[in-house]
Image 1 (cartoon, rainbow, N blue to C red):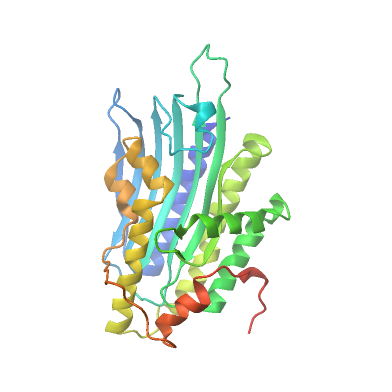
Image 2: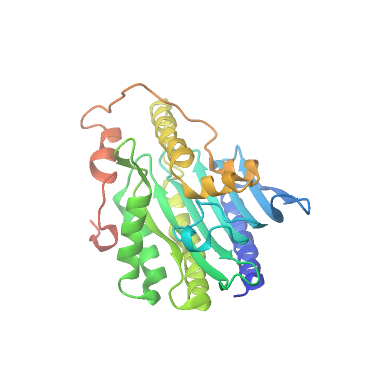
Length: 310
């Protein structure tokens, strides 16, 4: 296990993502470097890169964090029984991009490593596992965008077995689901967690494959849709659907819960929130409308990667 190797990769990944996003938008990210005071509940450091009010991205956050703590939070892993109470180390890059144009989809990506470091003499070995993935949340769906996003994801994880993409896609569909609403957050992508197959080297390679695929999966969609004309109707629907994004992040997302439960930096944790969101009581889209098509055609599991182009 080599956290330094993972840290170096993640810092490089953050830079490699922020640069092209700045070029696409024309506005620079604000770079906020932070560090925890030694001796506190958590120690560590990070870099939060934030862009607000841009031409393309209304709010975009790309954050790196590396923290260490004395006790693994219960939200950290499904294996908390065997690792409960262990000191831990967590590092990752997480991003959420909220475009201004409603025809450009919101996107989320996260890659991370979490390590449990049982105390000396406990008889338990250190354990490291990886997690991550990316998912797309359109406001107005386009079949070509969904197919492209899923095919890039499929190809990224292909070296890790024929069953990797189907398993990670299914996991993503199940994870990014608003149980209290009975609806998916978006069209999914891939998601994996508590990954230890093949040891440290294999898990690290999978994490890199996902991180390295992000720009290829997302930027072509941005360039295809950013110039489409929109009006107040589309912006109203965008704000309404962003409300669902807020609900998921605050109620169901394990990353948000882990950050808050472990005493993480609140500004960085909530950097994923949209700048504007709205809620309406029992609103339903007009049948046959473009807004209704999001629900009938996109907010349901589909094998996007296998679908033929029209």
